[in-house]
Length: 598
Ligand code: ADP
Image (cartoon, rainbow, N blue to C red; front, side, top):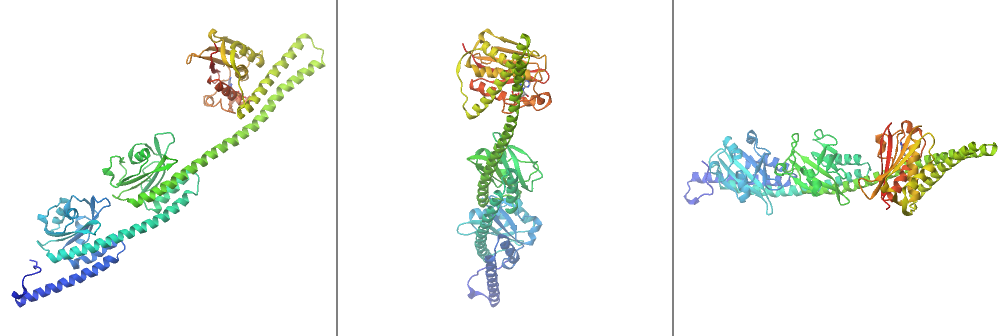
């Protein structure tokens, strides 16, 4: 049976009782000394772990009992986490376990801000997973005191004994004094740790920022950012997702840490799905320190994530990606992490913008270099194209001058001259058009144009050789169109001369003019041949500047790749469309539309 303390009137005590009281007083004063020593040590500690170790080593001398532990509140104060302070407790594996503050006597003490000495069976709040386990250890009575400073509730300190009613008032006083010292020391160390963490983080932010400016390649940049963030800040796992431009997906762009083997490179996540998808959609950060409580969390069978912090990466007011950190621990992240990672997200956002701008400039530059090369080729081809008809004309003219020629011969030579002059004139016209289109100086004269007239004009200028046959058909309702007569003739001339150029001898060329089925106010022109045809992969780009088929028979025929581009520009100015249907070996059919004239 424990001694009672303090006692009644000393005058009535026997000498034996007096001796006992004296001994008790001496023992109490020695415990107060122990408390003072312990308080000094706790006060000098630099970390929470050190405080717990000091308590563990010294408690037995202060309060006699078989078990002791401290339950410290989590950041959001909904749970407390146990650190055992006596070896006996190792058997019931309570160390590092989380309990809701609605559970157990530490929870009661935290919620009521009160200490209590109690028999375990009559405890006002007990739970099988905590007090039940203590009972298994044989614990009968307990002291529980809250650990709190003026401003802050930090947790509860618990002592247990296998004896019933083992504790007396001096025990609870000592426990309360100790818990106050512990609370002050814990608060100091947490302020110290925070200040140290911030100072270290500011240094690290600078280091990571330096790495971000060291490259303009996006992949390299994000890989080095995720690696630096994970290693330098010791995060369990770091992922960086990028938004696919104009898409509804995010793609995993960089990954460092412990889950690296679980997510394949190029893994995609839908915008709006999971915490990462939510952040991409809403542009706001999410801190889920217990993911099981967050409905947005997307559980992966292979992950044992418990905490997740995801932040948007913004560039030019647009969410371009998400930085995501995960941990297997509960409550792994706090305000400092948010602050630091937000700063880093800003840096990543501007680094991504710089890298993208650089990419764009590089692409434009590559395109300019390519255009420059094509222009040089073009000059070569054009001068060749000019020279061929010119020398044919010269030859025919010289023959006419030199020889005595009969009427048939004369006709033949003149035909050649007219034919080649037509080629020259189209070439000159096209070359001039290119320069004018490029400088925005091509001018149009719109009027009502007779369709049959421009077809005849084009055919006469192209001069269909005897090796090809030509036919045309015009629907009665399409005799007139609205447009620039010369330009429309130029388009037809280009298409007909291509049809001849890319068809072997014996080919048939047909021009048809019909009402457009799609838009009744439009007239549809089609120029068809049964020549080489166009491979599928080239069809989409043929109307671009300098585009040519560079394989097979077509690749052997010389050309500038500009005729169709000029046609497209002219038809565009007429508010129409131009396109092609074709099959290799069977032939091609080029179509364009212009507005009906009357
Ligand atoms: P060019 O004929 O000077 O190369 P174009 O812009 O007129 O330039 O034509 C672009 C390319 O389209 C040609 O190089 C050729 O490969 C293909 N092409 C044009 N018309 C036809 C056609 N009727 N049949 C087959 N291929 C054609």
